[in-house]
Amino acid sequence: MRPPLHPRQVEFFHEQGYLIVPDAFLASELEPLRGALHAEINRLARGHLAEGRLAELHEELGFDRQLAAIHRDAPEVGEAIVRALIGLRGGGYYCPEMFALITQPALLAITAALVGSGEIVASPYRIRPKLPNFGRGVVPWHQDSGYLAEHCDSHLIITCWVPFVDATARNGCMQILPRTHRGGVVPHRTGGNADFLVIRDEDLPADPLGAITAACPRGGAVFMTNRTPHCSTPNDSDHIRWSVDLRYKAADVPNNVGLEPAHLDAAGRADDAFYAQVNVACYPPEADFVVASASHPERVVDYAEYVRLRDVYARTQPTFAEVRAWPPLGQ
Ligand SMILES: O=C(O)CCC(=O)C(=O)O
Image (tube, rainbow, N blue to C red; front, side, top):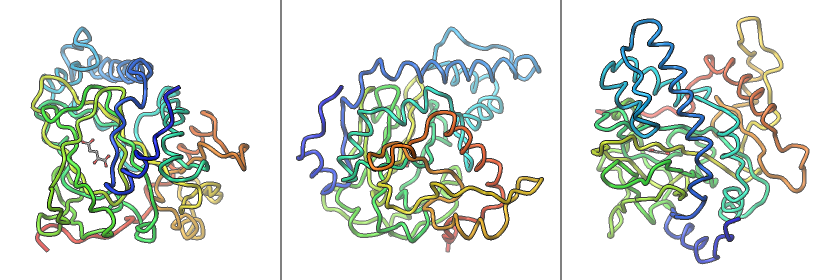
């Protein structure tokens, strides 16, 4: 088990708005999830091959390169596989290995030190295969709060960004604007690259020292607050910059734990009373899960409950309104 965070690391996180922990895991601890994702890519690719949309699987290229070769041969197939893995509202690919990462004791110990509580709720995550020279992988400047409900702006929600390869400036790691997280949420615009939210240059908070390049080795993790401005740059390497970004918060931050659509109709839609309730969560379209609790250990989810809850939310999400309305670029 890795040693707990040093108090100076916790202090650094709160002062700077980010913390890079180069040894959050043993690199070998990421292998099960790398293997599961690779198997899923092959499963999806075989389906496309059988239906004539793909001529070659490129299995021999391995996890770090195969999907890039598929995308080069058949861009629409590559896009479809990327979309299936990332997921949007309702979440993307999940498996026991993903759940094991989210609930990894060492990661939860770091999170507990950063949020100042051992009662922890995990929120939606994203899996990001950033292919080489893949325009959609470039994420413009934003604060994660830009995607979350406004009443959560003053709460602390941790983003834990875990690369599956050494993340470098060359393969498109993140850029972070330190020390600017205390100033609140700045205006965002819709319609940034690949339809992401974007903070226009004139709205980016100023810091005399400017942005840092958040390079992070495989086995490490980058932690940020929900108000820390960050972006990610193009992948100019010959391999995929694989990463996942997980989200955690203390259990007293607004969440939808225990709220379930009891009134689903036959089409999977819920009634207005349910939506009024779940709108108190920071990100209502996806389920939050208790992942650590000394006071209520019975609330900590196991994999079966995690899958059940994800499914309930995935079936109801199409009727959710936008979480937060920002004007489009150009306004
Ligand atoms: O992985 C990336 O390129 C960007 C990640 C990001 O913006 C996030 O986790 O909020």
